Each structure stands twice: as C-alpha cells, then as structure tokens.
Image (tube, rainbow, N blue to C red; front, side, top):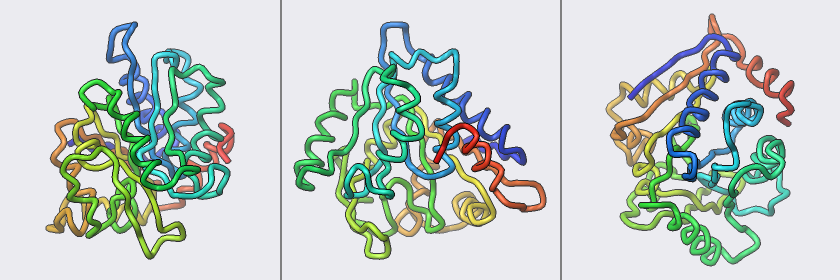
Length: 246
C-alpha cells in the first residue's frame, strides 16, 4: 500500500492524473487499457483534468463504471450522467469504448448484460480501478454487512441500502476489484481523515468496513487531499469547476 497526502489541491489532482496517465501507457501500442471509474465530486475533479492530458492516447482506453444507482441516465444521482457530463463528453468520442450499466433494463437483465461486457476483458483483469470511500467505509456500492461483500464468483452484484436516497444499485464485486492490476483510492477533507485513520489503523473487519479488503491488494495507492490546518476542501472543487466540472 502506498499513501500520498497533499495539502495542495492542484498537486493532488496532478499526481492523481499522473497515475491514470501512467496506467494508460502500460501496454503495447495495439493493446486496449481497461479502467473502471467511480462517481463522486473528488474523482470527477481528477477525471476532468485527465481528459485534458496531451500524452494519453484515449483511443486505446475502455472505461467501465465501478457502480451505479438504479436511476434514469439523466438523474442527478446517476454516476454515468456525472462522469459523462464532466469527463466522457470532453473526450468527444476519442475513447475505444465506454461501458455503462443500462438502468432502462430490468435489474437482473442489467446485471447480466454488464457482467457479460466485463467478461470481455482479458482474464477479467481491469488495468485500474479508481475508487472513493464513504465515511462508513463502503467502496463502490459494497456496503457494510451487505451480502454482496461475500460474492465469490460473479463480477457484478446487486446491492440494496435502506439508508440511501437511491436504495437499489449494481456494483463491481471484490473478485473484480481485487483482480485489477492497480487500485487508486481518492479521498479529500476532514471527514475522510477520520475514515482513513480507521482504514489504516483500526481493528475493524471487512464486514464492518468494506474498504479494509483493499489493503490486501499488492498495488493499492491512496491519494489524500487534506488542506493545511484542516481547512476547507473547496479548493479542489473550485479547480474542478474551472475545468468544467458541474
């Protein structure tokens, strides 16, 4: 595990983009690179800057979603909507492909369809999974004590969270996440500082804090933006807005 802490929002974004750009260049010129993206304001700020990177051949990249709320595509809580509006549209169709969870389908059909797309990835091994982490320690839509935490085989699972505004979701499972060649966890702010401390130093188990599982991955990187003196994280979102993030 590698942890990097940043007091500058610009440095946080720049270094996170460098990871994405480096992964984009890990294979031969004819090979496809597979990256799974999470939603959330902090990752969106990074994706927006990544879209402007001059040395990335986006025509070799295929993108997946880590998880999705079961809402229409144009819903304000749709991860696809946010990522498309703030990142994919900037690429102007330059990527090799974009795979999303089709919430116009019945739930089981959407799951099966998305899993079939993931199975097209060689060895089912994504090159990079970008993650966020909520205060309760969930990643993607893998919530504490959810049955999906223990899914042994499937690449995608259904989850239900009564505490969420949008209760029904589909998510990558741990077999998919942990088989990825690299993981990048993006965190920002005072609230996430306590959660990060829990992740690294508490005796909580994966059942109570799903992100604990990530510590078993051989190439797990955490980028944490924490303003000096514990100030506001607004700088990162201001930078993102200047890059066109809504």
